Length: 519
Ligand SMILES: Cc1cc2nc3c(=O)[nH]c(=O)nc-3n(C[C@H](O)[C@H](O)[C@H](O)COP(=O)(O)OP(=O)(O)OC[C@H]3O[C@@H](n4cnc5c(N)ncnc54)[C@H](O)[C@@H]3O)c2cc1C
Image 1: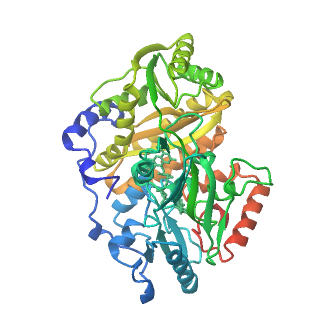
Image 2: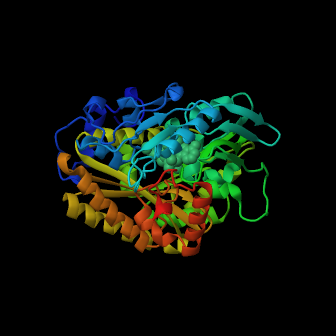
Image 3: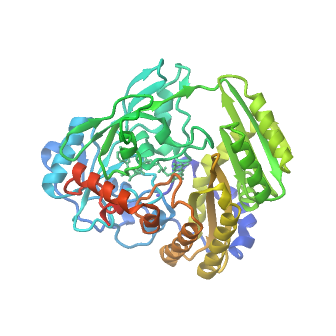
């Protein structure tokens, strides 16, 4: 059990050169391959419940169905599956096809004294869907919304699509074919995550500026509460009638209601696309160029900036050997974007960059590699290589000191816990006042100690992020994995207000218990 489609898994012949390139980082050859368990090998710790016959068409207690929704897709999840210990799993899985079946599921869960965990694509990397840390709740019904996937309508004049929350990224984009409009929200998990999941986590696509965060694209949404009532925000371009209700539910991670449908702002399918890549001698220089481009408000759709190690690892996947830092720029729009592209390249050059390629395919190649990267994690995990990522955002005034302090702390933790390791960083999103940094680390783990090693590393990197003033997440959300360190980020008064909202919307606390709302 790993990421994505079985046929896209990375084979031995692709993996070996990558292992060769990584050998210095891993301190030599990694452990011999040990494949992950088959579904039948995993024991579920939580007993199944006995749902009423009336719900049989959409509630299952089948082992594989429960296993599939027991975890998300983080390194911790994958290592947990391999640990061989009984796994916390949902007591039942509901797959409602419409709001009535969703209401029936919530009513049954409530009567049966079970918690309810909304589930979209299950691509959470922060323990968002795991039935863990649930206090007194004896078990949970996981509510998979993927069968609630209708597109209700496309308002071409307003450029808004109205769709059910369980629709997956590609299906939503396909529904717009022929309209000249598009969603163009591409998280790396695009193929396996849902509209509702994006909104519930306040996720971000790979576009680096302007259209990055999904919450800015939500025109309105509907949520169902545990009592079966539905609340819908008004579809408006903007409003100042008090705090924004859309923002209460965006980022609520399944704890303040089940998002049933969303009206999402669209963009024109871009008629013009251009890209450029620019080399820099080091990341610090590249960061200065990134800041200058962001603050010039040129708004490249794509502005990924890879530090030297990230550059080396990402080119190794395509059989290359990149050196120095690399900036990848992509521009797209309804009208010619060459002036923006030229202006950005000029700024980069003035900040010490050397343009390498300029055309319309570079960004596409990078995008292909971007969607392949998660498969590499599974292949490396077979060799007990620990591969994990963490991401954050900081103001410009904090970099490059923040980058160095996190790099150093992570490197020290990798040496201490695993004896060796490497840390890579890339800029994923840029703003006029700051930047989102995405770190990846690689280390030689031990098959039988992966979870212990991961917990030690996670604590060290999270402490470094918090100490440096970064957010615990720019777009992966809080889940169960970040709540310990995210506490300092939440003002006390806001915490009380959200607790008040939680008890008003979900009086028994049955929705996704275990997030910070409960502590
Ligand atoms: C390889 C990989 C790459 C990733 N890349 C990105 C990336 O580029 N950008 C990014 O933002 N994230 C990324 N993620 C994280 C993850 O894909 C996002 O958090 C995504 O938004 C989750 O969507 P989902 O449908 O899979 O939700 P799930 O994982 O099923 O759920 C996530 C959370 O949302 C809640 N939830 C889900 N649906 C609903 C609903 N309808 N109503 C209420 N609550 C709900 C769940 O209870 C849970 O708390 C990545 C994950 C992986 C594994």
